[in-house]
Length: 120
Image: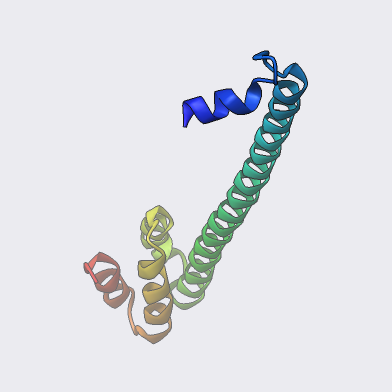
């Protein structure tokens, strides 16, 4: 294959056709630059999508924590402050969603604490 390329680049008199080499070099550089630009655009778009997704997830966690806090305070008053501190430490979205359901059902702060401390 190398010999074929060499033959294509060599003119009639055995000289290298500099115009063709320059043409292919510029074409290669242009394609390379376009590839870099497309890769950069894709990278930026992917980063934005992932950042937005992560931001929404964090916002949902904070909203769930606030909702749980409001219900605990309205049901149990200042006695719930210690439990609220524990809720604010949770980073597991699934656990927060479960606690949101439980906080509405429980009859006592102790019941909620048991749910809070359970591994499920």
